[in-house]
View 1 (spheres, rainbow, N blue to C red):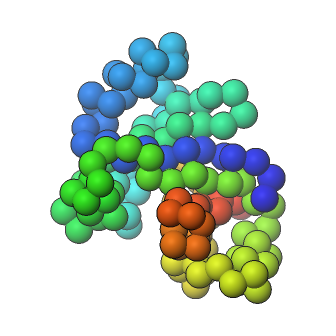
View 2: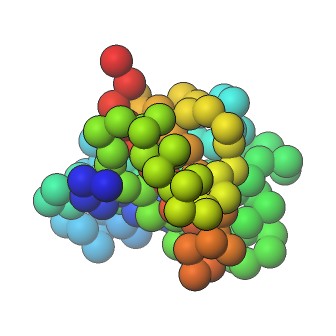
Length: 133
């Protein structure tokens, strides 16, 4: 894993949270994006070498809606940039980690993504992400 790529934060309202994080970080977001397959809207802020991704559910069945219903707003995941997501998935499987998807899928910000089960990472959802070609 190369570096922390972004930190994902589940929020009830992208508009309200966007204003909060704009004031907190002292800068405007650089991108909004809908990820229809995950029923989520995202808002990205750059913070040095990493990013903050705010995630708002667009449907009651989305992972973000379920997360907020169970835990409230807050830290949802930490994403690590990888050079070769397939090789990294194989390495993690060999180490005994459970992956939440068998193959990488399209995520926000032009990334291929895969998630490591939080029970295998001390309760933290870990995302692997690689720039999509």
